[in-house]
Length: 492
Image 1 (cartoon, one colour):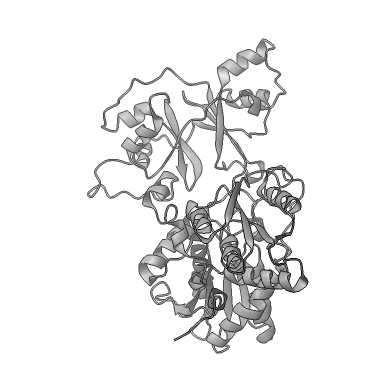
Image 2: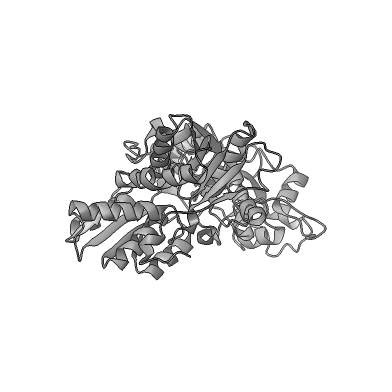
């Protein structure tokens, strides 16, 4: 049995597991590289150790110094484990969209956690990356790891992950599948595998549908630690230097729903509790393997543990709230769900009128003119998504009041619609029960936005929910035909 002198020695040398149930009926075997079995629970432990050791060799990280990093969580955990054991102070900037479990883990290991937004243009002073850069400038002896542009990130995988996979498969692998976040894992591992195999190994990137890496528009998605998001007001979209696009031979684009549900299957059918980005990678690997024969061998990398996402991907309540689960067993659960009500009333379409949150007040009012139904709702329209709505609802406007204000000169029609916002309507998921949806309405709202896969697809009213056979509760408010919700065009 292995005996380690320190936790640093428990980083790397992770096992491969045959996906014997998920790949049933597929000729090519699929093996999963279980990176969540690293000491810190993710593949990022490798990059963290590599970056710290290189910084020490370069003399930019000295005894008594401070390690600083911006992260979705995993790299920060690795840096904290390695850094704190070596006596460094560690400050980790975490996205306000990251799972709460990651923040709790960072705190447990001794990191000082700073939470900052990432749903901002990159040049915004309060964007997470700019917050940590200010900390680096202000703290004497601070070193910013900067995993996105640090060559020690992909080098960790060229030296470690790639050789391990080659040795574990006896050089038999033909395809390697991994997600792309900073790009370090797929770039370093892929470069080694191409070199050692004389370029016969195919490197496949698994990517969220909206990620710009694989040709998406950079709009929001729900799988953490993977892909590349771009705020619509970002001045310049810079890709990480840790990502080497020439290494990747092809991409498989995977929806949020498929990623989340595949991660759950991985736990329930294979006994591997891995995170949502592992679901993305496995879904891509299954597609790749279906094209291959028994002489091929696919290795897919599972980046992190599902224990960091118990409140999200592995929570039925969370998935139903955001519309990722909308199945309904009426025998086991007789109460109807929101999807049932929409199916019965035919209320799927016709009520949602879309307008960008970047629109003017006049443009918003014009969008509502002649809108069908008695409950027109305005959501942000992402121009590059051709009308598909994004996620973050940030407010509402009363179109009748706004129209009057414009006509009387109290509001300039050219002013941004963001200057005229009231509270937004609540949201409910397709899979939530009618009683849950009515609870979301409270006493003040006449309807709610319905989400499927995190995106607005319909509107449901209090009257429709009441007609589903439940007590109607408070009286329905007066007509809200002039109410308009405005939604951001991007979210991470």
